Image (tube, rainbow, N blue to C red; front, top):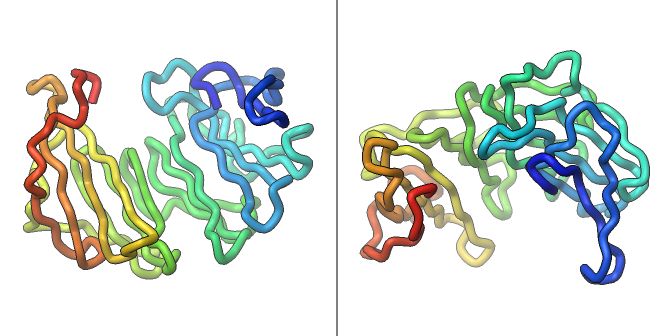
Amino acid sequence: GAPAGGIWKSTDAGGTWTNLFDNFPQIGVSGIAIDPQNSDIIYIATGDDDAGDSFSVGVFRSDDGGVTWSETGLNPENTSVSTLMNEIVIDPTDSSTLWVGTTSGLFKSTDAGANWSNVQSGNIKDFKLKPGDPNTVYAVTNSRFYKSTDGETFTLLENSALPEESGRLVLGVSLADPNRVYVLSANTSAEDFSFQGLYESTNSGDSFSVTLNSEDLMESSQA
């Protein structure tokens, strides 16, 4: 997926590529999800979530490996031009349940994209499902960490070792240890989005501690 250049597909291990999404109102693609039960079913989250070079026209679905596309319940009619989308994820245990992160909140569908509900407001920059327990969901804005244990209601983590203010947070989880959650934090814009710390939870995001890592993992002012 390209921020302003559609979605591309290769059937020869990357030797050649075909553009599948070149005749739509906007052709930015920031998120791709492939149904683990049927690889012909693909969802894309549209728009450029990093620089805003293209706005979102919603989530689109293909049932034939990207040959044709159709709108879902998040579409040009109800998606604001100020909305940007990032990751889109399919519940690995239930192909009808989808998640998409946006600048307008975290959206969830339980009917394969026909309808969506905003389950957590805010500018959601990243989210992850807990490995082995997709009802447990972690989500972050630029400076806040939220957790849900039922996939419907979210709680803000407070009084934690996570920084009170940051310019960007991103998440990491591991199949090898599902209770472990990592948060990489960039400083605020006043601090040039510099490396702020790598944080770790060993109890599914109920609390965090800063790791001993002090190496600048970003090596860039863009975080």
